[in-house]
Image 1 (spheres, rainbow, N blue to C red):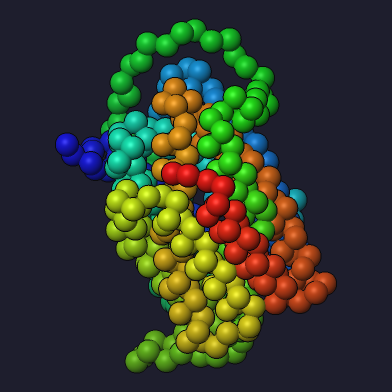
Image 2 (tube, one colour):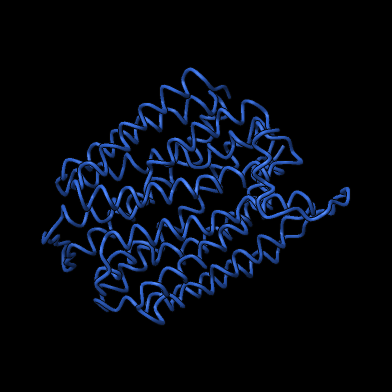
Length: 398
């Protein structure tokens, strides 16, 4: 039996190009926002609000996908929305406008995520899901590696021209949309279901398998303290300061070094996601995921110590392994527990709740950073990761 099917490959390429567009901008956004005078608290608020508002839709659209028995319409519309939102962000420099366009981008993710993951789940068996989700995350993150590299190359020859990058990001976004039309969904016979209310997906938690409830509780406890990666980038940039790296005729200043570190992280994530998925299929999702939690605690503890330049790259290497141990594997774990007819709802409920948790984590991270210092913004999540590791070890099963 073929594990990586045509559908999995195309969906992975769609994610790759969409992430080229997103990650072309992601490491640039905090630098750009700082250049226009936006404070750290506003950056944390922007990421939190964007993920919160967009996240509320993940559960709704996941449930609608299950009810309609369709996946592709949600996938197409979601990727289209994200593609058009990126160049809009720099039309105005007002904080409210920036939050609005960033939210529009994340809303596209909310529309497509559960339906896309349900398509991936349908292409796998319980013994191959970690590999399928790992392959998809690896390709997705390959795009997240290519994007910042393109940003580095552009900024090297056009220093400070951040706005132009937002317009260029529209091109890979269009390619991702075009690729979706190579997919054709199998028609399913479904029972006609009356359209449900926006928050009706919240009822899924009560009727879900007890294993799902315990798993979701642990994942969300961790998400409540796992703030945006932008805080890692900001800490790295502050730690690097005015340092300069000379690579032959190429000179990298602090902003470019920060982007290079983020590229390195994504490269490690992309290369490790599939092999770690294979390990999860062989040894169990729980063992692999919980190993990732311990690695997270080490990484965040390291960033709290105002690391040296070399140590920053070591920490981003470990962070890439952490992501490979947890990102795709958590979805494989969820989809293995959920029934096939409720896969999108199960993933949608979790990702919606996760977005609310991300809002709290990002705001808390910004406040901790501002009022108690950067170290506490990293020490607190590290401690929580260890507590969640203990919880998973004793209260959950694959």
